[in-house]
Image (tube, rainbow, N blue to C red; front, top):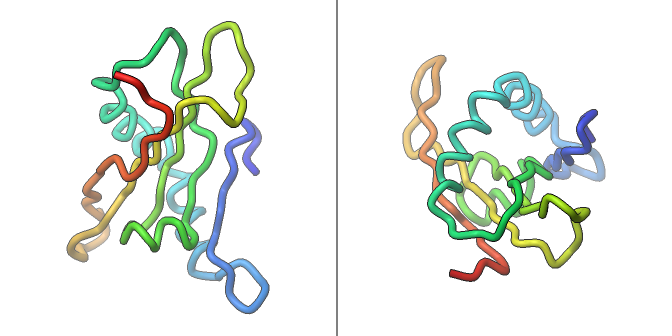
Length: 119
């Protein structure tokens, strides 16, 4: 859990967090501002009621693997006058690496899951 309550999920390896998963998570969290801004660009066209998208999780675990992604950024819509709850609209943005590159990976971003959005 990060200081802003963003949950970090890392794959399990023999009952412990995966060493590779932890390494990935550290790298992504260090570059979070840039990557989160890219993810938020995909949220702009979604027709949602008044509120703000809040990053609630970064998933490097099984869910990300099921979507063939390196990781997922998970956002929940928080109304300006309410707290987050399980029924809030929710979107997962997948970051995939379709090809391996050098030191600067080029992620392809897609919306993987969208729950409770009306439009």
